[in-house]
Structures are given as C-alpha cells and as structure tokens.
Amino acid sequence: MIRVTNLIKNANRTRILRGVSFDLAPQTVLGIIGASGSGKTTLLRCLNGLERIDEGEIECGDVHLDAKLSKHEYARRVVELRRKVGTVFQHLYLFPHLTVLGNIIEAPVHVLRVPREKAQREAFELLDSVGLKDKAPRYPESLSGGEQQRVAIARALAMHPALLMFDEPTSALDPKRSAGLRSLLRGTVDRGHTMVVVSHSIGFLEGLADQLLYMEGGEVVECGPANQILNSPQDPRTKDFVEQAK
Ligand SMILES: Nc1ncnc2c1ncn2[C@@H]1O[C@H](COP(=O)(O)OP(=O)(O)O)[C@@H](O)[C@H]1O
Ligand SMILES: [Mg+2]
Image (cartoon, rainbow, N blue to C red; front, side, top):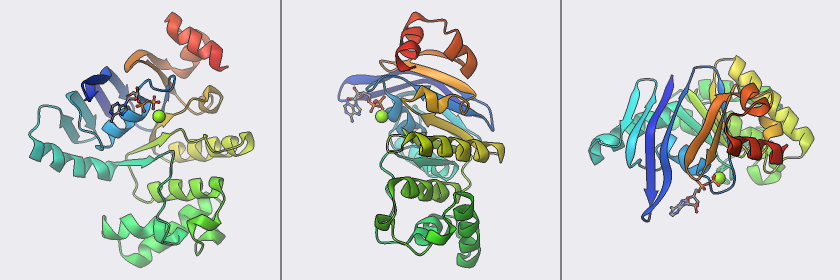
C-alpha cells in the first residue's frame, strides 16, 4: 500500500506541491496527468526520496517518511525507500560504460548483494521479457531509443521494486512503440507490480491506468477510477484538460 498525505514541497520560496494526497492499492496503476509545470516530476522525485518533502507524509509498505523527521532519520529511511521504489526517468540514465547486461546486474549485485551468476540469469530472463535477449553484450549507445528504454525498464525490474514509477515514458516513442510499451507495463502489473505513470498522453494511459490523478498548479484537482475521470470528470478543470488532450 502506498499512501501520500498532505505532501508539500517548496523550492526557492515557491510552493511546488500544495498538499498532495492519494492512496495506491497494490498491483494497480496510477496515471498522473496534468499540464507541463503542474508538479508531476517533482512529485515523483519526492516519492523516491530525491527531494526532501517540507510537510506531510509518504508511506510505502513499511517505510514511513514524515517531513517532521530529523535530517539523519529521514536520510536513513530514504535509503530503505530507494530499495522499494524503482524509477525510469524521461532521460533514462543508463550507464554508458556498461553493457546492457552490466547495466541490469549493477544494482542487484552491488546493492542487494545478489550473487553475480544469479543476477545474470535473472537479467537474461528480464531481457527476454522485454524482447532484447540478444542485446545483452551491446553498449547503450548502439541501441535505438525504444531499446534503451526497455533496458531501463528491465534494469528497474531487476531490483523487484514494490513501486515502479515512470516519468513521461512515451516522450521518445512512436505510436506503435507506445502500444508495445503499454502492454509490456500491463504485463508487469499483472505479475505483481504497482506503478505510477506520469504521462501527458491520455491515450497511452487509457487501458493501462486503473486510477487517474489530475494535477494543476501543484494540487490534486481530481483523482478516481480512470473510466470516471475520462468519461465523467466532476471538476470543470479536469473536464477541460481531458477534452483538450483527447
Ligand atoms: N528546483 C526547483 N526550483 C525552483 N522551481 C522548481 C524546481 N523544480 C521544479 N520547479 C518548478 O516547479 C514547477 C513544477 O515542475 P515539475 O515538477 O517539473 O512539473 P511537471 O513535471 O508537471 O512539468 C514548475 O513551475 C517548475 O519550474
Ligand atoms: Mg515533468
């Protein structure tokens, strides 16, 4: 269970997140939509501990971050949180000096202390599941954007995160690749993952997200079942956004 309560984030005296709250049930997908600048990326950065929150709480399984914690205790819990939350950023940040296989086993071997052979076996299974088994010895720069993205997904999955987050995963993909990515992600949810997917593309989230959250100016305008948000939004601001984005 993921629970975010009254999360507030300031940067340079500007309030970026203004009291964000939502719950996320296991094995479901939350889609986050909203115009550029509405705070979506900042929210993901708070959820994986890259930004310290200024007020509120984040609960992710048995890890509980509270803005009131001391600096030391907050940092200690962020280390725990990072083991539970995997993020695939818009810029994928693959290690350029490591092969595809090296990228995938790096964290399992060095962070989780999985024996190298076991990590490699699993990496091949993951690469197979994203259709890239034959690319294991290649370096990221020799792969297409879509292939690099699938490597980044396999790398995140190799850590068995309780929560997997994506920031604008379709920004570099053509429509056919987007559809392929959607079924890949849906498959990983069906195998037990919980996900947060930030996307400006409502079309991509349709059929993937169980719940949708619409943000504007750092606030949650509306959050609910995807069908309801798409077909009968309650707030006029959500309605405007959904209509324009269709
Ligand atoms: N470190 C920062 N300092 C000041 N303002 C920031 C910082 N990070 C983000 N912002 C501002 O916060 C707002 C939300 O940004 P962001 O989370 O990137 O939105 P989104 O991902 O929805 O486009 C924007 O107005 C952005 O300029
Ligand atoms: Mg963003």
